[in-house]
Length: 467
Image (cartoon, rainbow, N blue to C red; front, side, top):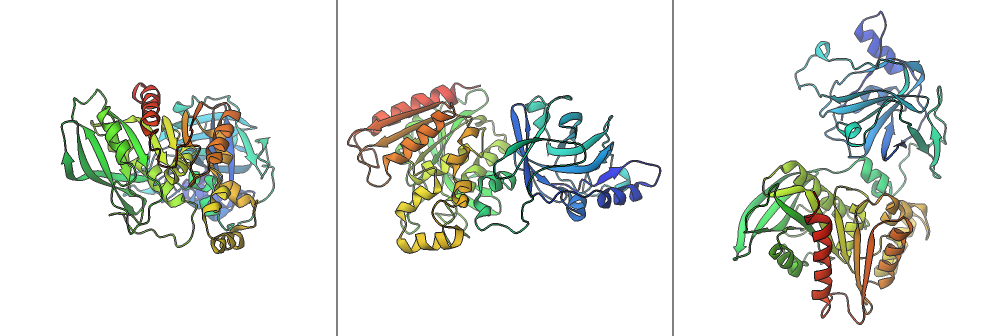
């Protein structure tokens, strides 16, 4: 992200202006706040002291899709922004009294060898008391305009507080990280691991309907392997629609690339979808899993979210990155539930017998010793930490339709988990369907064809037909 040093324009030199802006304005000690516009929200870091204001977003490689940085000032002014050290473009929003005062779209990052003297200063036409920096394109995507309201939310109750001249109200938060905070949904949104370098490694097999190839991509610094099926028919305009298939929990000693969704890979590829089955970290040819303890499947979720990113930046004529759907079984369904609240660009989700979207529910499958370790590390039963880790707590943010399938005789994952997820989605007015299969176990034996056909119709409606 970038070193957006804050500049107060005056009669002194640019260097003096920069230094004055860096050290002149005290900022409340808040770690992050939600900035809400009509129809869009940003989870923004707050530049809370001179060093953080000086650094701004400089040197970072990316900003999460709905992340940003908020600079607060003691008094309104025409506070200028420059792009020293910036690696990607931004939209800059000046705010005064809770209202958008001015906007600069697509402020470009300078080249690596650009001199300080050559860097432009982005200055508003009118005074503002705060500045919000977000990814370029955010303003246009959500039609943010001068005069729109901007509301700040802070505190555990997330009470709405309008930006007010001269202050930013709300409780202070500790600068000491909370155990488990690296797994919080807010943390994942703010510090998202981005994917890149998607490529086909080798041809594995082919038939008259599709080719099966081995693929890999980067999830942060990790290599993730996987399997992709590519229909052999004529490539549609814009590319084939894509389904990401998330497999369940399989021990690394018996796992092989593509295991866990073989039926679905074949069916959906035969129906005109490119299917991609990521192996996750620590499995098949992927990089080792660095987590030594229970991570609530966050690492796997990061790998799947990173796959969405890698597809989007690939710009392949074979793949339509605007038409991505996601399927998941068991643990893979739980991964998909987390992706629901992290990657709104996924158009539809189908979950087969998913584990719970409430992280604490999933302790049922752990040993007593493991649960004791979790309680000792992250808090006793009912700890707020588990809620902040749980996708269920953020289902109000789900934008894609969801279809759930579960057998009534499933002894591996209780059907109550799907019921809980469905009720939560419906309570927020989300598009959700839930099918129960009497007598069916975890793997959907006799009912698989029916469940698969319902899934196909769902994806055809919300993914393949979407433009």
